Length: 137
Image (tube, rainbow, N blue to C red; front, side, top):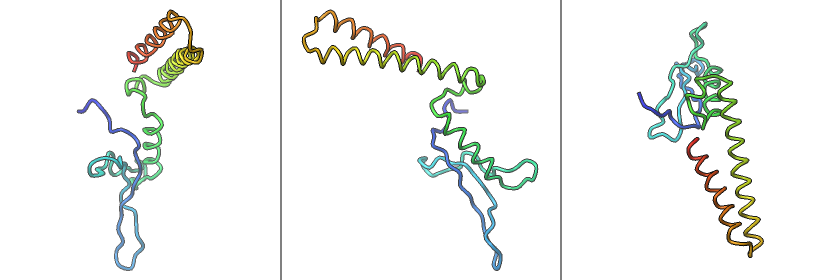
């Protein structure tokens, strides 16, 4: 088993056939990642478990969930919605800290002649925010 999943985007595709004199019929619905080496299916024969028929709705649901959750660690998803919400809140806090550090640096740069100790303090805040973001990634 691999440690990483196939990166998004994932997409839905269909395959089928038509016999002479009959209309084309979809016989398989599958999920794949278009940027992989040979577009090998990630999920093949996505079906409706009740009817046993190919299910585009189920395939589309799989694809939508995977694409929407790109970047969220699998362990967080497996832990449930409360953990995903906590992760989202952590990311927002991290973004706010990085934004504030960047705004401070830009403000000092615009002043041009700010005392050196102001730069050092702002750079330290930025370095701390970057280190924290890297450790939580």
